[in-house]
View 1 (tube, rainbow, N blue to C red):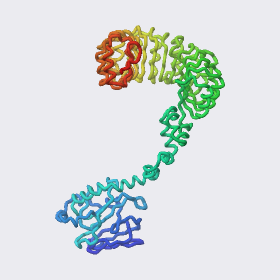
View 2 (view 1 turned 45 degrees about the horizontal axis):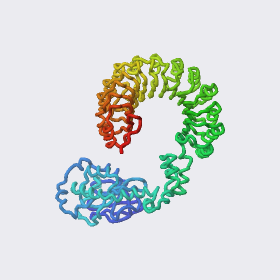
View 3 (view 1 turned 180 degrees about the vertical axis):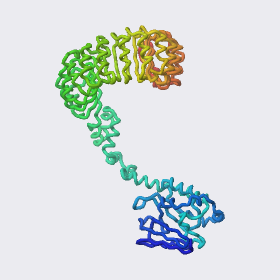
View 4 (view 1 turned 45 degrees about the vertical axis):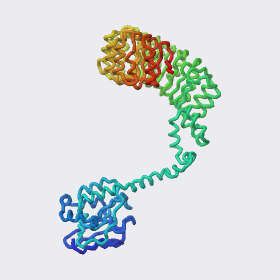
Length: 594
């Protein structure tokens, strides 16, 4: 570059001389040209954000102008000059701010000769705008300084420049200011720090407060939120928060109180109120007040009738799950017809009701999609009704609860062909043999997570062991083999190897053949157990149980009822080390350690 240089600006002036840059209007370089005789800069106005002696240059244009080969070279003259601390001025500062057109800009703040290397540019590119300070430019630099616009940089020692950049990067004030400004768009931080408790409620949007309170139960809302203030009282009883109500522990609530509560919960999604003797008027109020109901549990209602169900059918059009277990009048043809009219119903619990194969077939034909069916405790259901159910809903069934008293191995073969089956419970396996266990061993889909086979008196110890040789049951988290009296220690070892890591619930009631060896297998392989039921296993001494606090940290329930050989002092020590563990003693009472 020649000793004399000039800059031509549009609607502004910026003079570039051989002794430095004179202040003028703030400009941003949009294009430059370089030849052997002169230099010219075409500039345009930019916001008044530049420093006194700075010229803005768009970062992308800066990089596009660099000669990469020249950047990777080392200038001996520069290394010699690096010893002069006054001449080593930071040449570039990235402010992290955008101009009026959204472009990030860099500022040339010194005309001292130095070299801009590619790693330095990379640091600027990846710095995320963390450089916010720059030393004051030296206006009067030596006349030997040459502005190399082609490289858009000044020669200097790379290590010194990098050190200055690191120092600048340590200053985080710009980042904090940006974060504070962003936060102030929603909430004034200083105001929150100084605000009173009630002021915070006024600051936060209503939607956020309701979202926070939605994690509380209705009981917590009433006891701990409503008494705080008038504002919190209004939020506590906002209908949006009242979507799930459970009256299992207060089923005797008066009809007046019940109707008063439900009239104020128009958005209720789930209602559990079993064991009640209701009236038609009360049912009408419930169904008319809670038209958005999706899950309803009215099990063991003593006077449930078709007219009650018809009220829910007419008003609760979105009902998807219905529990009417233990309602003796369900065999009434009117009840079955009303049940079949719930078009969105896909979860039905009619356990311990009076129901025959023909009613089950009728429900299977009329209901569009049954994903969960509980017909446990209905010994009159045979393979005929099960076959009709599977013909129509085999591809949809996820959970199936059977009584099993009239089930055969052939019926179980059909059941185990359901591709989405995740839960299978059979309370009475009296007629089932090892063939059923072979079907379980060869199940193709491997989705089963919960399995209960109780009273499998005809299951052999070898079949029980071989059932867990394959990975088809490796995802089990709940296993109940109570009263499978042939289950032995080697079977427990195989269970532990197959699904021990995933098991959370294990029930082995009245499996008399199990000894301490089998119990050791449980402790060794089932470290994630939360529930362990050893009711009636009278051969177990339980010495290995002292390892429970270390080997089974998640265990919270241990049933040792009718286990007469386990020493009470051992249990005392276990509870002392693990206070959250509930242990049932020989007599069926909770073991209390004082």
